[in-house]
Length: 70
Image: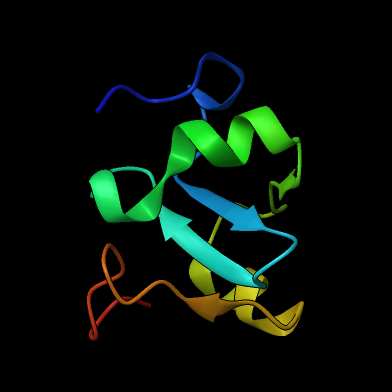
């Protein structure tokens, strides 16, 4: 799966509806990133790190975020 054009410089992408954060370096079909982009219910994080996404209340996607990511 290719990285969404708007997020070429980002690794972490938030799904505002499901409050999940996706690792764009590891996404697959179950993550439904194309659907997320169509719904326009996404967020980026500054700084672009997993702990920032967690600080904002996002939970790691079980399909693309490794358990040991920090």
